[in-house]
Length: 407
Image 1 (cartoon, rainbow, N blue to C red):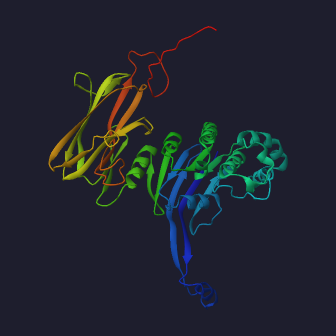
Image 2: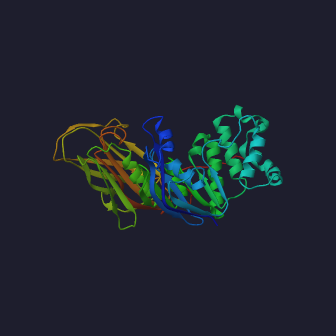
Image 3: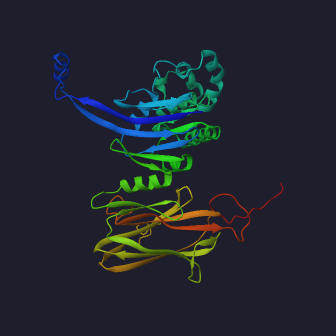
């Protein structure tokens, strides 16, 4: 079984004031230092248990790729240590290790040998690798004629030809087409069922929340947050907004989940509820039942332009529907301080049985990246039950009719 242990890991690069400073440092008696250290990672510690899936997220430049290089040993740490138990397969930079003048088949065999497989084993595995990669006759063409997507297909197929104890995946999968991405994630999920430990870097919120048991947020080279994927992704989403005069807070709820609230506070949600057709507050909704989402907003300062948005998220925190008043053409203008606005959203609850949540947004445009007055995740949690509909699978209730003709 695969296990990863990272202790106080750090990486710094030497920065010299001029081109002759490096030589002077080498030649000066007493090894006088003429450089400064630029840290890209500092004091990173975490464990990944056997069979666990952990996602690493963060904005560009946060240190995600550097961390994976340190873990896989392609870069040496300045401080700290990494230890791994089990056979490791890593898919980092696209096509890393591929020689452009060799064919895909030759590169695949060499890549397999680097993973510890013999030539005979690779020869046996090649038909499966070719079938999974689906690059056809290009397998015997030089890699220099490959597209980036074809390189990713071949690299992933080789790295996962034999189920590893530890699978480490960087953003390389984002290069491929949608079909191969689905195919790749299906293989990763199958490996997970068989006990493979997974460490994945991705900006794909759905991938992190659907596949991972835990998420780690990196910010400016440091571990900013670690925990359940939904709460970490919510915090990350809040970080992406303009930070000027904005606060971000996380509040534990009675359900055990963590609510993230961010914004300037110029407008805030003061009350939110679901109402049935008689106007009564409800927490349990029947499949297909007509409901009204009622959101009351308190205005704390004059607002030139107000856009209200909401989203419905499933139990994993993935948004299954969302819309806002910018899209519907109902933007409010010139709202006075110390006033209140009530938004009523009426819709049939055409969802499958399960637990869902509402997220709300009070902004000035169709995103929360400018003038984020308040973004509130887990603003409301409710349950959907199937009372009077035929049994069905999935998160959406589609009132379908099947007709049959014998021909």
